Image: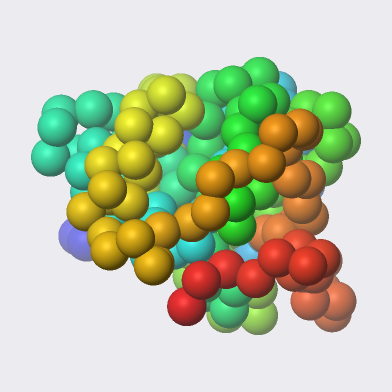
Length: 190
């Protein structure tokens, strides 16, 4: 009974993710409901990567304020979350200790089947894709992060963002047996 409920709530989200992936891999992933599926970034979503503490606090603020929260992929190993945002909306994101992936990066997001945990990659969905295509607004996320940082003492706030292009990353693009690299020169706050 529980698995029937799980299938009815996760299958639309899985189909939404699989729609832009390589067809044979998507078909196998949907049939087996396990493993990882590389989904192209930039067609249905961009990804903002944040320290999981920051992301969790900001997403909670969004939910409390009645704002939409879309799918969020968590890397347990990296202690980061990848927040799926509308395509093209992450181009000017410059928050220190965060990173983006957009269509320009020609990357994929390696996705576990919704509702499962992929142990080897340490990936799971903190907020499941539901198939609606609703994503987290970068403006709302930025406002929620600002509210979170304003509540922190000055010494633990991130520095002002430098001018220029957003930080690009391959974080959360796991390809066994190679571990995903960390951003060069930038470590997430602990």
